Length: 221
Length: 190
Image (cartoon, rainbow over all chains, first blue to last red; front, side):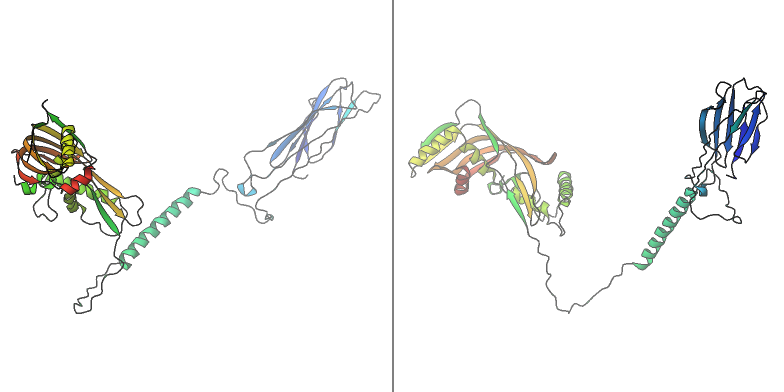
């Protein structure tokens, strides 16, 4: 993985070693102590850390403290590399102890790393074509698109009205052909009816006298 | 008051169909309201002048309405029944002073081909008549004539909540030998 940087920390205070090599060998001066060795893998867009506990009790089978942590690196890659880029890094570590006359401990950290990344669009950039970075928060300026679209629509509407005004002017044609034979109008008969309901029989009425009989006198002729 | 023009249209002074005089404000308001009502009918052709037709609805004679009310009075019904039994006999009845109040709901129905429910323009008519000295002539179970008498008349014509006519005569109507419409009224009642 040429684009990964391996940072080995033996955990005993010795300087951190950088490089592209996937394996280092480190000898502890005080094998009786316990150490936590770690290796950090730094990729272009991610970072992973693996830690390894080393002790004199069981130096040949060190147990990993943390197998891997991976986190994306910010700022984000350019958008044309797309958000689908998913670089990952994994690391494993092993330690062995070589008994010698002088008690020493040797830890061999052998991290392995894999990284995958996808790009969209799929066109593979060449060495000579350096992608132009676009501001990470910009994307496509949609507001420009909206403003331009609205302007074009307004202009089209205005143009349509102007054309309509000039093109569809009503014209009046007089036909003073009084002598022409008249034809009766057709298809103008409307079938309608007006029905008058005086409704007098359904009315409410009340007849009141001042207490006397309604008929004062009855006579026959 | 001339007995020959005792229709409700005349009494309420409703405009004649082709009247040239300026109608009252109430009538103008009624015209505009009715115009709005008619516009709700989806009809491609212009609507006939409906307002001018309204007057026809009120071509009802006031004596005919009075006869209908009298015929509902129990004592008069008895007298009519008696005259029915002896149809050749003419009976003359002198009525006491009385008041008749009426309420009617005449309406005009507009039916247009293709429109499922007809449009109904309904009015409310309220009448109050005070009758004095009425003399009725009855024969063969019908009131044939109002021989005499007089009545004070007042009434209202409403369309929805709009009063389009409100009339109170300052002089009583005199009835003098006024024949009634026997056939029509008899069929209305029976």
